[in-house]
Length: 145
Image 1 (cartoon, rainbow, N blue to C red):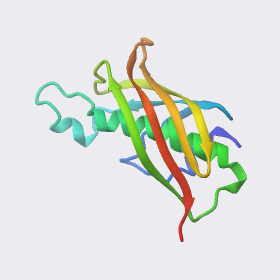
Image 2: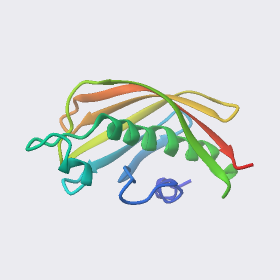
Image 3: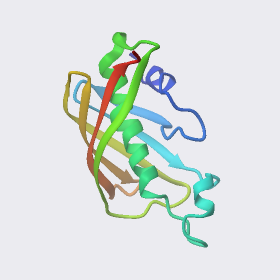
């Protein structure tokens, strides 16, 4: 499966798509990038005169790249139109702020994928290579009933 095909299969669109590019994927993990454009609506009110990317958006970005994209890669040919992805848990640690127009990379390592549940260890880094957040993410990949 091509990495661009994974992005095309994501169940998100602008303005809630937080994946620009996937750099690598294999059965053990995935790496991708996203740039937080200064025009994004949440910057208008998340700290007046000093906008910072909300932690929930950082978590969502890590989940889209590190969990959903990896899940799509792992499912490969088993992905169907009725496939549903449900985010089930996150244990996050936030270490540094992410500002508007900052590019981040997310690397995710599969802990396990069984019975439709995917659990990963994910790390987000800024362009300087500094960790900005990390955590354990889990989700279910299933089909509509």
